[in-house]
Length: 135
View (cartoon, helix red, strand yellow):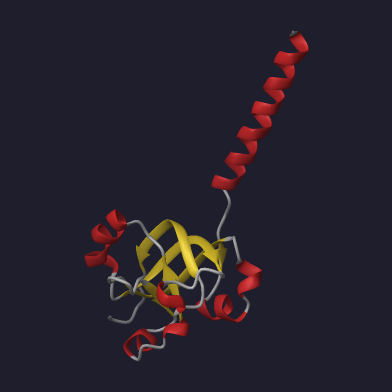
C-alpha cells in the first residue's frame, strides 16, 4: 500500500512539473519573414511576433507591413485564430495597428480559404507596439 501511494505521488509530481514547464516556456522571437520562409522550424512552438494586425470577419491576420494588408498580399500574412469573444473585445483597440503578439504557430492551418501562410493559435499576449514614429 505504501509503495502504491509513493508511485502515485511521483506520477502526480512528474505530470505537474511537465505542465508547469509548458506554461512557463519563453516564446521565441521571430519575424513574419522567418515564419513564412521556414515554417517547419517554428511549427507547434510558442512564438512572439511583431507585425501589422487586421481583425475583421474572415480576415484576422498579422502582416509584415501595413502595405501588405493594404495591397491584399495575403501570403505575407499569418492567420490569427482567436475566440469570437476576444475578437469582439480586441478589434477596436488592436486592429489596424502594429502589435506584439504571442501564440502557438501552426504551419498547416492556413486560415480562411487557405489564403495565409500559417496561423497563430492559443494567443497568450496581444499588445500595441509603440515606436518613435507616429502611426
